Length: 450
Image (tube, rainbow, N blue to C red; front, side, top):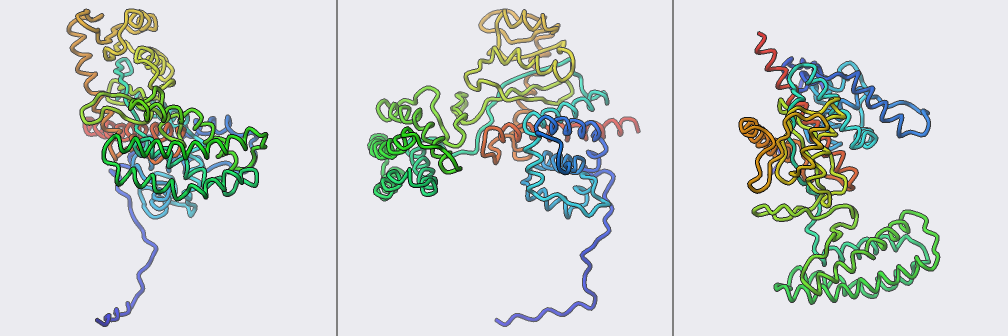
């Protein structure tokens, strides 16, 4: 069918528009609620610690902090942020670019976010909590804490998948690694077809556990042969230089620990303790939660605290899954003290952190009512009425955790390629939650005053 030609317009449509942004728009209210001078000072202090010398042009702090804020409340990609800041009036207002022709690209926003890192995002969150405290909508005397898992965006870590990923990394890197790895390159070419066949057989034709284990053992022996060739080249005194050789050395070192763990599973059917679950992010671990439908989560362990008024604070737990709740229980109070200058008067935590030692330690730190849920038939360390109040407040922590894990904020399964990036994105989700909370509460104050 012939296409009907479109009638030519008498006057061409303009591509420049005059747009008036509503006073009640969320981003407009957010721009007016935040103390930008304080945020800029925090960003400058972080940058000064990371650069070797103050040379070259300084970042556009105000504009880029606006971009970070936009990504926190919208949970968008760097390219989407670039597009919104260029063409969306409320986003330009948030970034203080209404009267400017300058616009940040996605690379500039990414590099600024990377420069801030997890610590920088945490500092920005502390500034927001301070703003809420000054406005009288945050009560730092109440603190309720819990732990949660931040799942990583990775495939299920089965043995065949890990070995197939290893072979894929080696094949890609060994082709650019120079003549010293020529034997490994030749070996890969010899067994490449066999490896693909075994992976396909495991995914498509091995239906029972025994069949999968049989295919896994064959792939294990082939992968071991390649690993031995790489070890010989590295141990022969090869000078590791260039990205490809560094990647081969890194992944070969990881597989030294992973191969025995894989063999343990293939021989016994049980997962080895502290098993490596990802080759790119070897710091990730399995977190046993015991939940219905999701007994194990793969990622990192975080502590989330709900402060009086509904604002939250969080941090990645050092030591991960091997850090007990008893240790985290006290660490949550320390983080609160560092942010607000004093310990909460009322503190609640679940029975995982219970011990007489922790109760006494919390009291010495300045907590008046230590509401750590007791185990067994042990009595609470607070009165019955205070215990009931703490139980009600602690129940709200789960709601906050569920909210930041939703697609609105993107705490869970962030599009991160490293543990460092997961920490940054986790803190950014918390920042986004608190920013939206701040805007809502300030608006409620205005309505109540009117």
